[in-house]
Image (cartoon, rainbow, N blue to C red):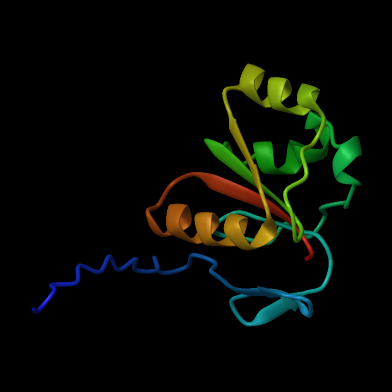
Length: 128
Protein backbone atom coordinates (compact mmCIF):
# COMPACT_ATOMS: atom_id res chain seq x y z
CA UNK A 1 0.00 0.00 0.00
CA UNK A 2 1.29 3.45 -0.92
CA UNK A 3 0.46 6.32 1.39
CA UNK A 4 0.44 9.84 0.10
CA UNK A 5 2.23 12.26 2.41
CA UNK A 6 1.12 15.84 2.56
CA UNK A 7 3.80 18.25 3.67
CA UNK A 8 3.28 21.84 4.63
CA UNK A 9 6.18 24.12 3.81
CA UNK A 10 6.66 27.46 5.50
CA UNK A 11 8.66 29.90 3.49
CA UNK A 12 10.74 32.55 5.13
CA UNK A 13 9.83 36.10 4.27
CA UNK A 14 12.80 38.19 3.13
CA UNK A 15 14.11 40.34 5.97
CA UNK A 16 12.42 38.22 8.63
CA UNK A 17 14.45 36.88 11.54
CA UNK A 18 14.35 33.12 11.97
CA UNK A 19 15.14 31.20 15.13
CA UNK A 20 17.42 28.43 13.87
CA UNK A 21 17.89 26.48 17.11
CA UNK A 22 17.37 26.41 20.85
CA UNK A 23 19.94 24.53 22.92
CA UNK A 24 22.04 24.65 26.08
CA UNK A 25 24.55 26.78 24.14
CA UNK A 26 21.96 29.44 23.39
CA UNK A 27 19.28 30.62 21.02
CA UNK A 28 20.46 30.93 17.41
CA UNK A 29 18.67 33.71 15.55
CA UNK A 30 19.79 33.78 11.93
CA UNK A 31 23.59 33.58 12.36
CA UNK A 32 23.90 34.98 15.89
CA UNK A 33 23.74 33.01 19.16
CA UNK A 34 22.21 34.58 22.28
CA UNK A 35 23.15 32.94 25.57
CA UNK A 36 20.75 34.94 27.75
CA UNK A 37 17.16 36.10 27.54
CA UNK A 38 16.37 37.64 24.17
CA UNK A 39 13.40 39.62 22.86
CA UNK A 40 12.62 39.92 19.18
CA UNK A 41 10.15 40.85 16.50
CA UNK A 42 10.21 39.47 12.96
CA UNK A 43 12.43 42.41 11.94
CA UNK A 44 14.80 42.94 14.87
CA UNK A 45 16.34 41.68 18.06
CA UNK A 46 15.46 44.10 20.85
CA UNK A 47 18.88 45.03 22.20
CA UNK A 48 17.62 46.98 25.22
CA UNK A 49 15.59 44.10 26.70
CA UNK A 50 16.31 43.81 30.42
CA UNK A 51 15.86 40.25 31.67
CA UNK A 52 13.50 39.96 34.63
CA UNK A 53 12.68 36.78 36.54
CA UNK A 54 9.49 35.30 35.07
CA UNK A 55 7.65 35.51 38.38
CA UNK A 56 8.37 39.28 38.52
CA UNK A 57 7.30 40.24 34.99
CA UNK A 58 4.91 43.18 34.60
CA UNK A 59 3.44 44.77 31.47
CA UNK A 60 5.92 47.68 31.59
CA UNK A 61 8.73 45.19 30.97
CA UNK A 62 7.26 44.69 27.48
CA UNK A 63 6.92 48.41 26.61
CA UNK A 64 9.58 48.24 23.88
CA UNK A 65 7.74 45.34 22.24
CA UNK A 66 4.38 47.14 22.52
CA UNK A 67 5.87 50.01 20.45
CA UNK A 68 5.84 47.60 17.48
CA UNK A 69 2.07 46.96 17.99
CA UNK A 70 2.14 43.15 18.08
CA UNK A 71 -1.09 41.19 18.01
CA UNK A 72 0.60 38.43 20.01
CA UNK A 73 3.61 38.12 22.32
CA UNK A 74 5.07 34.66 22.86
CA UNK A 75 6.86 34.08 26.15
CA UNK A 76 9.32 31.19 26.10
CA UNK A 77 10.03 30.26 29.70
CA UNK A 78 13.12 28.07 29.32
CA UNK A 79 13.23 24.28 29.35
CA UNK A 80 9.83 23.87 30.95
CA UNK A 81 6.59 25.79 31.15
CA UNK A 82 6.48 28.36 33.91
CA UNK A 83 3.63 30.80 34.24
CA UNK A 84 4.12 34.53 34.86
CA UNK A 85 1.90 36.40 37.32
CA UNK A 86 -1.80 36.33 36.40
CA UNK A 87 -1.89 40.13 36.38
CA UNK A 88 0.48 40.10 33.40
CA UNK A 89 -2.09 38.16 31.36
CA UNK A 90 -4.81 40.60 32.40
CA UNK A 91 -2.60 43.57 31.46
CA UNK A 92 -2.06 42.14 28.00
CA UNK A 93 -5.79 41.53 27.58
CA UNK A 94 -6.56 45.14 28.53
CA UNK A 95 -4.18 46.24 25.76
CA UNK A 96 -5.79 43.90 23.24
CA UNK A 97 -2.56 41.92 22.83
CA UNK A 98 -2.44 38.14 23.17
CA UNK A 99 0.09 36.48 25.46
CA UNK A 100 1.04 32.84 24.94
CA UNK A 101 3.31 31.11 27.43
CA UNK A 102 5.22 27.92 26.58
CA UNK A 103 8.68 26.39 26.84
CA UNK A 104 11.31 28.16 24.76
CA UNK A 105 11.66 25.48 22.06
CA UNK A 106 7.91 25.54 21.39
CA UNK A 107 7.92 29.35 21.51
CA UNK A 108 10.68 29.44 18.88
CA UNK A 109 8.75 27.15 16.53
CA UNK A 110 5.55 29.16 17.02
CA UNK A 111 7.37 32.45 16.42
CA UNK A 112 8.88 31.16 13.17
CA UNK A 113 5.53 30.01 11.81
CA UNK A 114 3.72 33.24 12.69
CA UNK A 115 6.55 35.49 11.50
CA UNK A 116 6.71 33.48 8.26
CA UNK A 117 3.01 34.18 7.76
CA UNK A 118 3.66 37.91 8.11
CA UNK A 119 1.83 38.17 11.44
CA UNK A 120 2.56 40.95 13.93
CA UNK A 121 4.27 38.82 16.57
CA UNK A 122 6.96 39.35 19.17
CA UNK A 123 8.75 36.92 21.46
CA UNK A 124 10.69 36.94 24.70
CA UNK A 125 12.78 33.80 25.04
CA UNK A 126 14.48 32.66 28.23
CA UNK A 127 17.42 30.25 27.85
CA UNK A 128 16.88 26.52 28.34
